Length: 128
Image 1 (cartoon, rainbow, N blue to C red):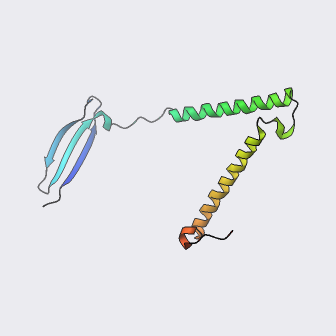
Image 2: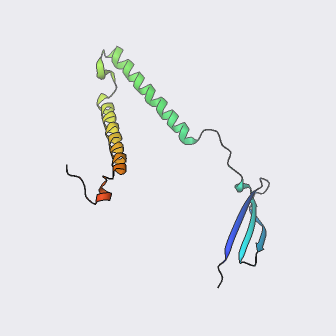
């Protein structure tokens, strides 16, 4: 039994709403060449802002407004000073600490990969 090969070529045609097989050729070498015209084969237009980008922008604006509003309120209404002007300072200090820990972990993991000190390369974990 001969091996059969199929080559499908998609051609962009915005006037075709339902894809249709336009041409099928069988070569003597058991290779099928299929040509399909469809609007879905056209390249996606670049540009514009995605929904995820809009969400991140709105989230950042809300966080900035929350922080500035909280700082101004705590500073002038509550007469707080130092880190106490931050709204929920314990939460924000925890976020900073966890972010630094995550960065250190990533840097050490990358460094260990290049130095060959990872647990998978030696089969053992380093002692604590």
